[in-house]
Image (cartoon, rainbow, N blue to C red):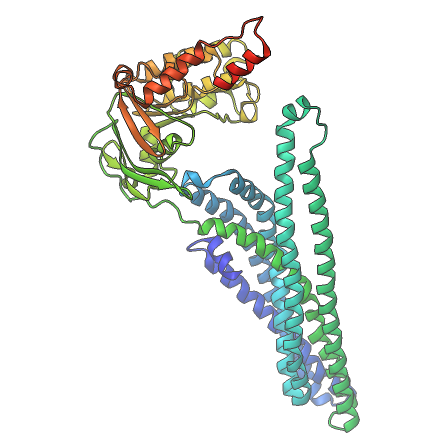
Length: 586
C-alpha cells in the first residue's frame, strides 16, 4: 500500500508520505515508552522510595510532553498529506488518462473509473486522516512495550513476543476476510450500477414491449444482496477470531505475571504494574484488526486507482516530426487486431485534398481504419502516416490538430449549443461559427431553441434529436477546419433533411480538407474521388464509381444489390406469400 501511495502522490511528493509515517511511528514509540515508565513509578510509590521517584516522574513527564508535541506535528502533517493526496489524485489521474490510447476507454473501464475516481478518492484520503496513524501507533506502541517487558523480566517479555505471531496470523485472517468481501462487493456494485443505468436508458424499448420490470436488473440486485450478506458473515467470523486471539494473549500474560509474583521473582506491586503494562500491549492490538480491515478496504480502492496509473500510455516523441505531405493519409501494410486480426496487410493511400469513401460489409475493418488513423491504438505491423509522418512520431496535440472526427454516435456536453460547436475551435469568431452552423443546418435549429445559441442542451445533447445532434457534430468539424476529416458512418440512420446538410458539408469540407468517409448508403459516395472496397481486413478494390462499376467486381455487386432494393415495393393487393418472398430477397 505504501508503494501505491507513493505512485499516487507522484515524483517529488513522496517525502510527504515518508515524513508522515516517520512522525506517526515516533509517536507510537513514545506512547509505548510512556506506558513502560509507569512501572517504576508505581513500584516507587508502593515501596515508598521517594529518592528515585522524582527522577522517574520527571522522565515520564518529559516523554509525555514529547509525545504530545509529536502528536500535534503528526496530526498537522496527516491533514496536509490527506489534502495533497486529494489534489494529486485527480491531477495525476487526469494527466495520465490523456496519455492512454483512446481505445482504452470502453464502457466497462469508464464505469469502473467513475466509481474509483469518486468513492475511491474519498476512501483513499481517509487513509491519512483516519486510518494509517491509528494502525501504525497500534503496532509501534505494543512493540515498544514488548521490548520494555524484556527489560523488566525476560520471561514476561518472551511470553509477549511469542504471542505476536499468533496475533499476526489472526489479524491477517480477519483483514483478508474483509478484503475478499470488499472485492466481491465492488464487482456487485459495478454490475448493479450498470444495470440501473441500462434500465433508465432503455425505458422506451421496455415500455414499447409492455415491460414495467427488468429481470436482469432484479437478478443483479438479488445477487448484490446475497453477496453483501455473505460478506458480513465472513467479516464477523474474521473479527471474532482476531478478538479471541487478543483475549487469549491477555490471559496468558496475566497468568505469567501472577506466576512470577507467586514464585517470588517479582514483587506483588511490580507484578501488578507489569500486568497493567501487558494490557497496554494488548489494548492497541485489539484495534489492529479493525484498522487493518479498513486499511484493506481503502487499499483495494487505492490499488484500483493505481492500476489505472500503471496502464501503459501511448509513447510520444518530445518533438513531432515535420509533415512532409500535409493532408495525405497512408496505411502501409498494416496488420492490427483486438483479439483476432481485423486488418491484414492493409494498404491504402488517401491523397491530400481528396474525398475517399470506405465501403464494405459490417465487420470488414472500416471503423478500425479510422481509429488507427486517429491513433486509438498502435498498429501491430506496418505504419499509419498522417501528413507523410508516422503517427507514432507525432505528439498527440499535433496529431489531433490535423484531424477532425465525426462519429455516428454523437456525444454533446451539458453546455450551450454554441459551446458545443466551439469545441472544434474555441477561438473561432462569431461569423465563422455562424457560417459553420449554416452549412451544417444548425442555424435552423437555433431559431427553434428558447434561448438560441445560449440554450443549454443537456447531458449528451438530450434537448436535441438524433439528427440535430449529428448536425452539431458536423458543424464542429466544419469550424475546426482541420486538414483531414474522418466521418465514421456519419450518414447512418439520418433523415433526408440532415443527410442533405451532410452532403453539402462534405462538399464544403472537400474545398480545404482531405475527407475520409465510411458510408453504407452508396448514393453518398458516388461523387467521391476514390472508393475503397474493404472486405475481411483487406482492400479488394479501389477506384471511382464509374471505374468500379465497369470492373464488375465487389463494388458493382453491392451497387446492383442496392439498386434492386430501391426497386422493391409492396402493392396494396400483395398476398402474404408474395410479401414473404420479397422479404426473403431483402
